[in-house]
Length: 203
Image (cartoon, rainbow, N blue to C red; front, side, top):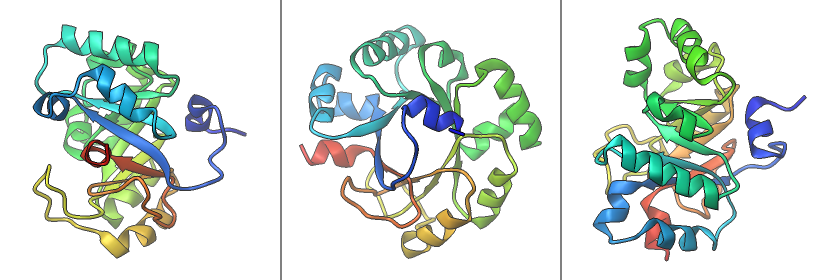
């Protein structure tokens, strides 16, 4: 039986290191890359999921951008953090702190989130074994796990590198490796390579 994620993707997760792209709108603006240009870059790759992250624009612009991306991409689009935009996306990804803001008990948080997002995709960021084991008990669709390598875009002290494949194996949910991940990285036990600015650098 296909999982919720597999239904959204339209295929079964039999392989590893599929491409999951982060569209950080602030990064695009800083590099003077329009959404049209961003889509041209994506066409060079076999992208399976896109996450839209925007910490600078007002909600109306974010809605317009999500509408544009959904009309031009035939893949699931995940919104980062902002549950109020769930009607414009196929899923929601939250960090540990944002999840705890919904409710300190994560199982209750999932129920509250599910009441709003229904059967849309739900992802949670994790960074260590304790967080992964906790995520295993939650009715979510995938986890982010990282950081894999040091990155220029974030100041990260928790670098997993060679530990990441072991941690990924513990997860009962599909794992999206993040943080310094490259398109062509082969990371054992990881279903998705989550690539952000690296895809812009390769253009």
